[in-house]
Length: 375
Image 1: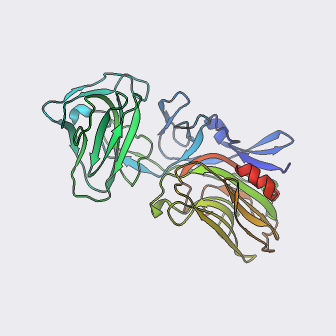
Image 2 (image 1 turned 180 degrees about the vertical axis):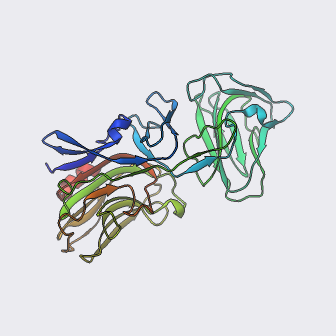
Image 3 (image 1 turned 120 degrees about the vertical axis):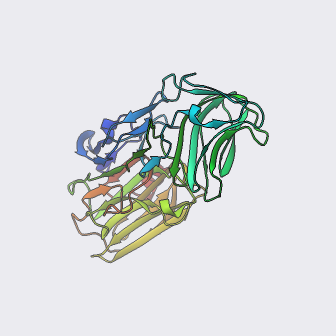
């Protein structure tokens, strides 16, 4: 078996494990530290399905819709609500009754707000265009509730806590409302954790109490060792999920083997167009300029990607299928690739998404091995 530089191993059990990449040879694991940075606290969903706070500069292992956990890397966002869980401060229709501290919330404490209402009722708050609104709701399974924010969505309740969101791309509406307009059938629900943020999708919950709050961006860089990463041949593998499929602002997000710059790199990335995945091998000194590209219906699901590099044998595999290959004979100079980072090599296009697994092999795996690895 090839010597493996391994992060995650398909099971992100603890934040301590996420701080380490592993050189696995004969089952002898040698830790190599990653550098995680985030200049603020943040939240994740833990193994018990509850929202919990993670400290400054600590990696976030999130278990939302994933029993094994994934590394969560998000951009900086601000919750523009100054009191994210104070629904009694919202304006309301005359027939709405709000009861604070009613039930157990997604954070495990008794601080949900009960909302009782009739047909065509609402609670509402002023907002501006170009924001994403989100809120946690719980109600009788099969009934529906409507969230409006310029645009609107009608959500079917599951009987459990659900988070619903809606993005307003620029309407003239000035209200965010939780309502029973247009036939929404719910009459008794619980609410928790309202959020308004600039961006086209909702990020993890940012609690506020008395003022707005900003979560700093996550970054992860710095793990590497030229004795482990082979520059003249190798394989980079990852299992990732993107946050959004249609916005090019969140594309070109890299996971890269590099020399610390963008001039020498092997990379897997969310590509330059919506729903695009790419593999790149580029060397400024050796004249390598290869790019393999494919598009999916939606990158908002976990996909397994691998790229191998070797003189005469370059290839990109996705979910068990060879997407492209090249017989390019040029190869990286020995000891060039000595760093693995969640960006392009200069910190300008940091990866944003969910990472379930990440491995670097110091040999170019065979096509059959890559097919099995990515299936």
